[in-house]
Image (cartoon, rainbow, N blue to C red; front, side, top):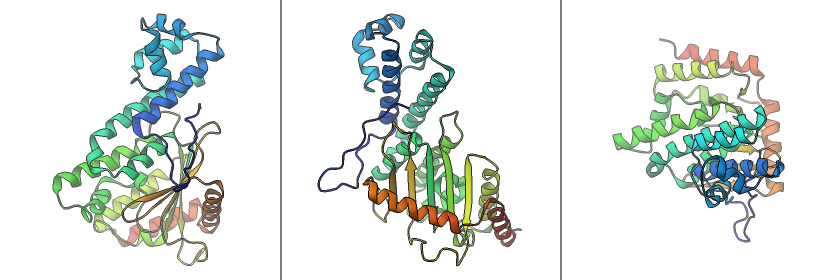
Length: 301
């Protein structure tokens, strides 16, 4: 996939990425891909402008990600350039990503800036590796479980519902057409024993984890009590991996009132090793399902 320019850490805050977020990131990726396909075929922007009866400046804005892409125009350009099925699937995926990111904008007033950035980056990732020691990872939460978590931080019913809805929309990246990321979720066993939302909600949440574990793109692993105590961090970690010509790999570490986006290669490697060690300590897929089923028994009606 064509690249968004790789982030260049500034001198004072080298761990924070400056990538664009949401629809802007998707538009830039799509525009770069179209430009690359055009140049590979030795076509000019004028050639493409004639296809959709547009100005050259419109094609230029489209390739720079500055103009919201119209799906019909983009697919007409794809057919004109006789793109391969793989390239067409990439374009369709980026159009879907832009559409989904645009829908997230309606939740901007209830979404912290640092979380908006994570949502945008998740949508562009090839692999997501997440470790959670307190709650089920956000990409795997059911609505009632998410609502119970949101309710601990917000009191206004309207804000609670909007924030919950945003969390559910965020999960679309796991269901959309390719390209979609693979997810490895390392979950501390204590999360299974903490009935957020009550026993009934927790039972449904654990059943949801079992259902998702049947997906070959979702690897759910439970870190049992006592396993990997030396390498288990006291905080959640998310590592995002991108295609080789995409953004640099990074690590997201969330705090109470913010988050760090770690892009320094040495630091990213350190967190990558920590996650790899955790995965080695975690139960395998079969054992993880057994641990989830065992926990479900405690919440059965």
